[in-house]
Image 1 (spheres, rainbow, N blue to C red):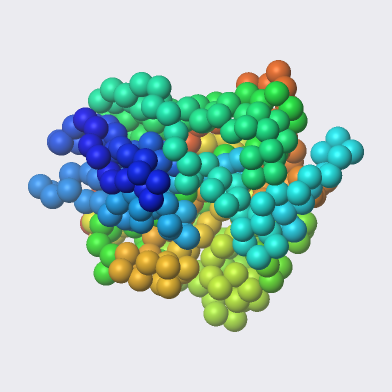
Image 2 (cartoon, rainbow, N blue to C red):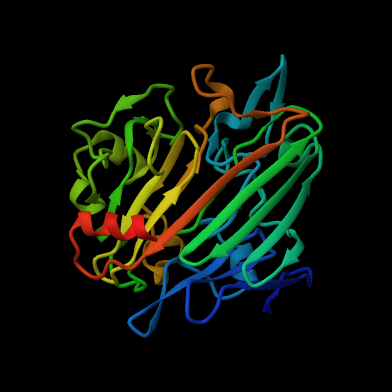
Length: 350
């Protein structure tokens, strides 16, 4: 099913493509930015919304919070909007002060994608990013495939380029599994198998160090709520205004993250082979979209600002390489106020 989702200021028609059936997990994805505008699951006869969303295309095009978008070419921040590659310097579009964030002024998330195919269980989107777009070198062809199977929503990125370019795509939904904006997102239980995190400076850029999560608010190796872990005296949380940090995933890891709402009884596991996960607590929404409440962003990705840190894992795509990364969201219904062992068991069965 496809429906109109409004028009942009230039008259471009935006469409919402539905995946799934009325009696199961159901998603709606826009051809604008590949945005996951709606994700719902039936719980005790009601449909529970799992991600925060906006009412129409115009609201998404103007959205400063990147709700639901496909992020690229480079997710997260690049310092001073500059990097060097193979002995040549490049300057990117600066869209957060003098820094580059989530691909620049429009990035992938505010541009129109082409629908390659659409069925009840899958949507294939294409985008061609020309040489020089947002300052990036080389032409880049990207395919994003959403696939819904049972209680699983999979997103697969594939890409090829004709010149070396930084490439770090990710996904930016805001999760509040309670399905109720009045329920604090920080009351969700979170587990992330990360032994280290990347400290940030006053511009939210990584300092280049890796720090042990032990004894810090960033230790989610055992499930806990953000509210319980939060420490107002922690210097890193003060500089970030809350959680806006990259967690370095243990290798190998059983998942990228697990999230559970004791209010709705919905649980989610994120599977991905990315080396890191950006954890953002959604505090910017208090000003950007105060009517939405908060949601948590859990973004599997490469390290932020990697092109400017030789000690970080490489995040350069080169000609001849076929980029492929999958992010899979697995949902289960263990029920309200369950022990974490019951949550894990339900996700294992999903």
